[in-house]
Amino acid sequence: MSIIDVKARAFAMPLTSPAFPPGPYRFVNREYLIITYRTDPEAIARVLPAPLVAPEPLVKYEFIRMPDSTGFGDYTESGQVIPVTFNGEHGGYTHAMYLDDEPPIAGGRELWGFPKKLAAPTLHVVADTLIGTLDYGPLRVATATMGYKYKTLADQTAIAALQAPGFLLKIIPHVDGTPRICELVRYTLGDVNLHGAWTGPAALDLRPHALAPVADLPVLEVISATHIKADLTLNLGTVVHDYLA
Image 1 (cartoon, helix red, strand yellow):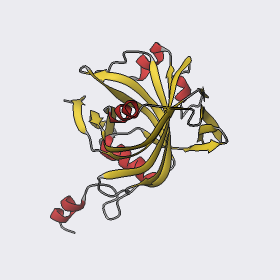
Image 2: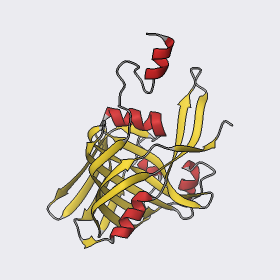
Image 3: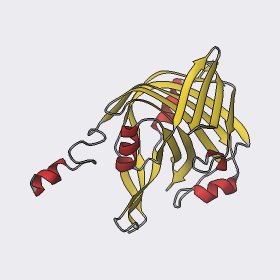
Image 4: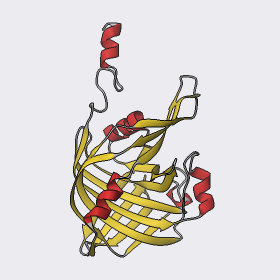
């Protein structure tokens, strides 16, 4: 294989059998359970990278079921997003993500900088309750419950939440272990086709774990809960701050 061939084919690793295909990445029947809660402002200060700012000590704990996603397959995800501002623009900083499928772990980390780790989340309905769980190894570290389709949420509210920009800290090390890329990345979701959105009573329980430290942002008060079903496209990102420049 010539140098020209290598450069033409080298969009992801491994070279001859990439872990994920080129985009765009379309998600069909994507389902969210999002519980917004109040936490300790000092806990947020310990994990939120400047120049992002958290206007309030809030966290969105998310469970996302993705049964049909281009190139990534069928998987479930769970994690924490901190509402932030960047240069006056409101959005969300993805602090932690746990999922059960290798291609989106590799693609999410390499392309955008999503902080993805391998774990075992679930999102399902039992009788009148929407239930999200996250296990890291044999241990349960998060449990969320919400009344199923308890009250309809306005379409505009749900779409606005999905279309808000997201921010990520992308870190790729050099061969000597020092950071070669350390960037703040902005991304958006597009082409949203909303199937439905609801709100209702909810509860969230987070348990301490050394390698899945979701409880380091403790739940002080549950503020709201949202259940959304939609089709959407995950757009590629742009670099908005280079920490190594």
